[in-house]
Image (cartoon, rainbow, N blue to C red; front, side, top):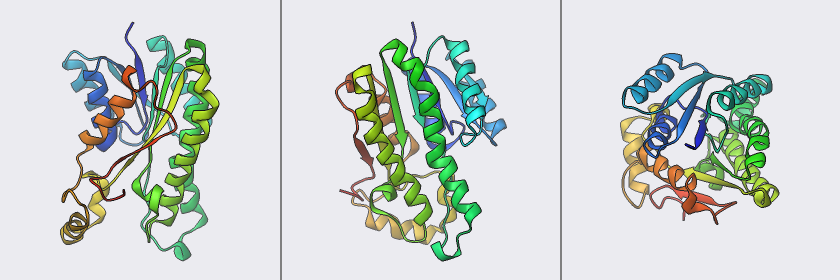
Amino acid sequence: MKKTAIITGGSGGIGAAIAKRLCKEGFITAIIYLNSEEKAFTLSSELVSEGYNAFPIKADAANPIQVKNAVETAAKQTGKIDVLINNAGVSLYKLLQDTTDEEWNRVIDINLKGAFNFCREVLPYMIREGFGRIINISSMWGQTGAAMETVYSASKAGLIGLTKALAKEVALSGITVNCIAPGAVDTPMMALFSEDEKKTLCDEIPIGRLSSPEETASAAAFLASEESSYITGQVIGVNGGFVI
């Protein structure tokens, strides 16, 4: 029986790259989206036309009821949940002193609470099967912090803490929990920066370039595979040597 995967924030950037890679690895893939409906349906249609099994589900990761319904829908359609990729996220580039309560809540609710919500809902399915792979997409700023991205950094650091604690909690149930911390990835989020700023950033990266979403997807595919069975509670940096 094919393994199944849920990917949050699955309609674009890193999420879409992971969806494509896991489909190629033989997974049935549920693509969770919130606002990017057209992208999610287009991606799913493209994958189906190529012979893969993928389908979109709309859900707000920050809303526990919508998350519960999304996981139940995916489980009914596929029979089980083997892999969860918590990729849904938003950024905020702003001084802390100028950050509003609403902005703080939005970033934490989506980036951190959203992962908690999905983990809580998929765990009963994984525990029943005695197998599971949970992969949280954090950031190198969750490891080091970034000026002007304090709230984002806090949310991604929290995701690392969640990963390490949950890995200990569910290991005996056959479930691994790991974290990927990408560096500067060439996605729409980078549109915030000018070409000169991107060049300056690349000059600081030992490998000398931005990462592609597919490079994070490769790490996710490995952590979702049987070959990663003895790896849990780890933070895998995909950052070109920026953080060592």
